[in-house]
Every structure is written in structure tokens, then in C-alpha cells.
Image (cartoon, rainbow, N blue to C red; front, side, top):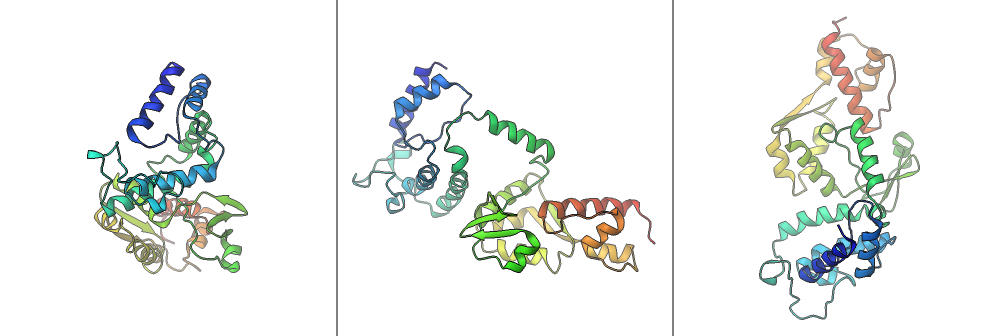
Amino acid sequence: MESSTGASLMENIEEISGVPVDVLIMDDDSATLSRVKEALDHENKNNETKLGETLTAIVPHSFGIHDKCGNWCNKSIENNLHKYLPHGKRLTDDALRQDVQIIFDTVANNAERLAPAGSTKDVESTNNIYASKAPKRFCFSKSENPNKSIAPSSSAVTGLTANGNILFYNGKPVHAVTSESAFQSFVLWLEQYGQVMLVAHNCKLFDARRLINNMSKLTCYAAFRKCVSGFADTLPLFWQKFPGLNSYCQQKLFEHFCNEQYNAHNAVDDVDSLHKLMTLSKETRCT
């Protein structure tokens, strides 16, 4: 694309939609990027706070809730015309607003990655590395923003600490999202498999109860119930197949059958170890 064409296209998008272009994802074409910046004269580059505020304000602006737009839109305009919406009218459906806000909040939480406004090649390379180790089709992992303080005793075990709504793991900040966003993504990930059953060790008394208790408060609970047929607890399976063991907690079972240890307080390691145990349980005879 010619640089002048790219700049003209961005200007047309802003003029027609009435919404400023804040994020441009493209190949490493410095000429076009420079021309677009010159044409749009935006100030959010390298300003993750401002970019995050702008992204968060897009949804309320589209629904006419201008008191939540900060300084992003011109509130002085009477009957603000939304050129990018049917008949120029604002959106009104509250359920739609909540669902769309989740998406934009998730993007806004990544403002520090988007603010440099540079090439996406490094990001794509990193994503490819992650995908080769844990393809999104088969693996799901999200961290939630803490909504309350984490007890020191829990931090000592899990390595998780919180400073306000920022989550840290072993002293390093972790990308985290709201509960609604995390569970919404979880349900979308599950739906690709159709009807599923969730498996966990001691889930009858722990995982299943906590998952349902948290999800029942969220808008994605109905969708969750449609795609999840139930839960399977692996603890009784090991009781029945391998009687007489000193302990049936997952960590001890892993040490017994795999002759190694794992980080039992890391969710990804916890899932991976249970998968290995279930595989071994099919191959190991009862003692």
C-alpha cells in the first residue's frame, strides 16, 4: 500500500465513523506508519494510560453514556450523531453493552503492549512460540484481577501477591483480566468442543463448587451450562484402583507414580500433572 493511500484511508475511517483510530496493526512499513501518524496527529503513542482510557471509553460513547467517556468525545454536541451506526443513533441494548465492554476492557488491559504503535512482528513471533508449546486450541490459561487482598500465608504458598488490582507472581506483574472477561473467554474456548465434561482431582468438594459459585454470578453462566454436561472427580478413581496408598492428594500421587514433583500451586502444572496421572492410571496395574 502506498503511504499516501494508507493515510487517506485512516482519515476516511475517522471522518465516516466519528471515532478516532487509536490502534493500527500492520506490517513493518515505516513510510506508511509515519504518514498515518502525520495525517492523524494522535497523541496516544507510548502513552499506555491515555490509550487504555480511550479504549475503555469507546463502548460508553457508542451507547451515549458520555459521563464515562472522560475527555475522549465532545459532550457539548447535542444529539451526538453516530455516523457508523444505523441512522446515526446510539446503541441501547444493555446486555450487548456489557458483553462488548468485556472485549474492550480486555484490550485496554493490554495497553502497555499496544502503546508503542510499532511493528507487530515481534508480537507475532512470541505468539508463535507460545502456540508451539501450548496451542490455544488445546490449552486455556487466564489470570483474574484480584478483587481483595491476598493473605501472606497464601502468598507464601502460591507466590501470588497483589498491589491494588495488579497481580504479581513471584514478584513479577501478571497480565490479568476481570472475572467476567476471564470466564467469558473460558466458555468461548470450551464451546469449540461442543458438549464437554470437566475433570479435576477432588472437584466434588473443591473445584466444581467454586467454579459454579463464581460463574453463577456472571452473564456467561447460561452459555457455560449449555456446553458443560457435568464434572468428573478423579479422586474416587484412584481410591478404587490403587487401594492402600498413604495419601491420595494429587501431589503425593504424582510423586508415587511419576517419581518426581511439580508445582502444585500453579494451575497449568496442576492440569498437566493430572493428565499424566490419568494416562499412567490406564497403564498401571493395581498393587
